[in-house]
Image (cartoon, rainbow, N blue to C red; front, side, top):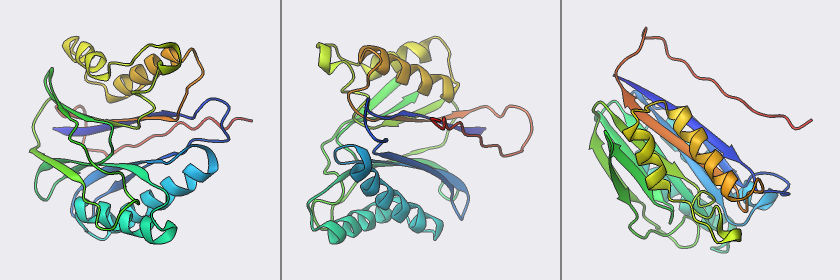
Length: 235
């Protein structure tokens, strides 16, 4: 098997920059993690918040700290820095080779989705974002690694897409439609969801939108680890 990760993100229309931050890090005992933070509001202030949270999390993950403890520490760090006046939605999506599990850590009011084949489970238990209170705890879901798992986390800009015109984005239905077509390419899934959201916003996203997809698929080709990125420079 292999783990395949893809990210797609776009900033709020006419904003100075995206307030979402996403990083990927290899875990010291094997595996990989994706960390997504959505800072309160938008623009530079939100970017400062989300960057602080993500940097704290990846620093701790790189030292072997567990995902839940890293999320709690990031929340305490933001609370201490800003006195509980700002917050960030946080997701950590991990393939942990030590435990041989896929781990979804949520401090994000937006749901997370996990599919086995085309059967989707929605995790939407209410949880506080990080930074508002001391000792804020995440909701953690951990499942054994197996073929044909698909995990999806996203910032709330995805579910808010279309709100300006009275439309709505049914993320779960969109994902299920792709899975039933046999689509297992995480980049295709991430791009399709983002494109649908931007279309509902009539090409002018009402909020920052970030999507991270992790798929467990049969091994394709060799054992070489690969990673790529595409960053429009805007000039």
